[in-house]
Image (cartoon, rainbow, N blue to C red; front, side, top):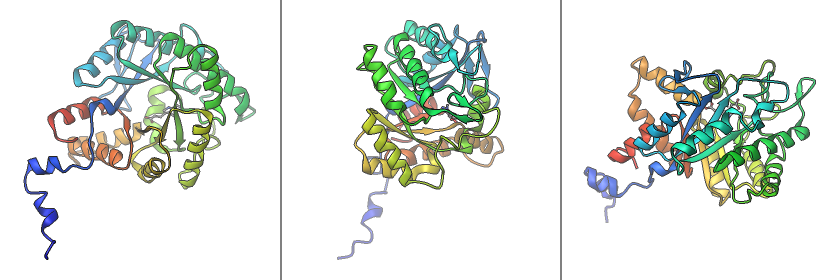
Length: 327
Ligand code: PBG
C-alpha cells in the first residue's frame, strides 16, 4: 500500500491542521515581566526594550490591568530601588520596591499571580548577584541574604519566588527560611539552568544591573554545556525546587528538551530580553514579520518541552492564542 500521501491529507485545510496540532498553548502558561522603579511616578518607556515600560508604584496596577485585558494572569516582578549598597540591603527591605509593588498589585487585583525574581544584582552598587570578597562573589554568606529577600517577598504577598542568582545551595536556604517563616506553601521556581548569556544585555540596561566590573561567568553556566544543566537541575530538585527553569530559551531548546525528558517537575523557559529586542529590531528594519516570528519562536519553546514561558510578548501571544493563530 502507498502511504506517501497520508501526512499531506492532514494538512489539507485549516480545520484539520488545527485538530492535528501536536503542541497546545494557553494564555495560562504565559508570564509577563514587570519592572517597577521606586523613583518613578507614572510610566517610562524602556529604551532597550521597545514596547516595554518601567512602572512607578503608583502605576503598576496599569500593567496588571493590561495583562488581564489580554488574558494573562501572572507576572514576574523586577525592582529598581532608590538606594543601592554593597550588600544590596534594599532587596529585603520591608518597604522595598518589590515588596511595595506586590502590595499595590494585590490591592488592585488579589488573584493576579505574582512571582518575584530573587537576586541581589539590581540592589548592589557593584551589580553582582551576591556579596563580594575582593572581586569574586562569596557564595555562602550570600545565601542568608537571598533567603531574607525571599521571605520578605512572601510576607508582602508574593505567590511564588524565583531565585535567579545561581549561588550554590540557594534553593535549600530559601526553602528552609520560607518554611521557618510560615510559608511552607510558597513554591520556588528555580532558575536552574541559567547561562552566562549575552542575551541579557537589554535587561541589564533596563534594570540597571550590569556588573560594574568583570562578568557573571563565575556563577552562571557555560553555554558549551548541556549535561551540566541536568546536574544543576538535579541539585535543585534535591534542595526542594518546585519548578525548574531554562534561560535563555531560543538558543537552549536542546537543554529544554533534555530537562523535560529527565525531570518530572513543571518546566519554565525564559525568553529573555535579547531574544525580544532582536525580533523588535529586525521587524523595525523591515526584515521580518514580527507577529509570525513571535508566534513561531514561542511555539518552538513549547514544542521543545516547556510547560510555561516568561516572555515580554506575553500579552501579544495570549491574543494570538485567543485568535487561534497558535495553540
Ligand atoms: C537577575 C536577572 C537577570 C535576568 C533575569 N534575572 C539578569 C542577569 O542575570 O544578568 C535576565 C532577564 C532578561 O534578559 O530578560 N540576575
